[in-house]
Length: 282
Image (cartoon, rainbow, N blue to C red; front, top):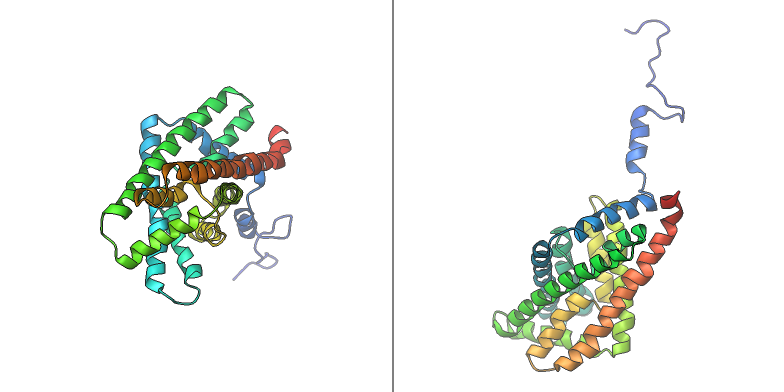
């Protein structure tokens, strides 16, 4: 029994909520843009400080892993055959490589078009640009070597059925049918979406798989061009003799690279910094 006159109510806060409810409110609040910016900036600082060896092997692993986007998409297309809407379903295979790379914390070039740039914006120190270019160079080179190894496996291993091999070739043909201008414009879209994905991850605790799948599926569905995933396809097409090196470099690699950087760095990173600058400087 309680004493007469004693309150049996749960203690209330000034807002009329219990302490437990107030704690839940704080835990469920979305992170402010400035907080997200700071999380990504700190990650960028850590990446910029990593050694050549650490960056190289992580980037090589990412190049190999991203190849599963092409392979998974081809396997689904080959399995579905003439099923209506098979391409829409097969595009989910494109998400597989990105899920491996991002959840395994491997180094992907397009992620670093945002992550590595944010620290330089805060420093406002031109010497930081060299650190970014160093990181980009190592990661891009490692990614491309991984892409080459995976593409060579697709072309020469004989591990896949004729249907799967045909599907891989058709995916490559579909990519290389784009003009350089289309590669660039579609690359901007892919660069923006990957940067948006990086921005969303700090706030997506527990739903990372869904967020990664959603964003990368849109990239596949929109036929947007991604410099690393697309390099597996372009290199494969070179290895089987359907396109020349000049066409792969000038028609795909350069315009897509510029498009991804424009979308991820010039547009998304600058706009993201602009929206939090006053909070950071205040």
